[in-house]
Length: 132
Image (cartoon, rainbow, N blue to C red; front, side, top):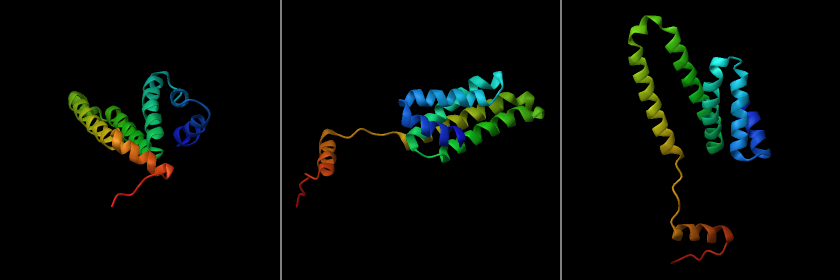
């Protein structure tokens, strides 16, 4: 909530979108204070920053961060499944692909046709003519 809710929101008001996202993701990675986690944290920070900028909601970011952290803990904390790490990797990949497909479907903006774009512009200008 700190990096997307406060820092990124502030950066988005001051800097271009991608500069704000990259800066907050870099700070997110640095906050993990672990060289080995830095790269992964920056990558997920960029995605979470884009997700926040796109949805203007912290809920998808919190859910995705919780899922990612749970996956990391489960992968490291279950030594009895070490021989079946390929299964964990396959299930994780399938869950990630399903989540990515869901997010794409929810967040994908379809362009307006020229006729519909004209109607929207006329409506907002107040020059639209109602057809009876």
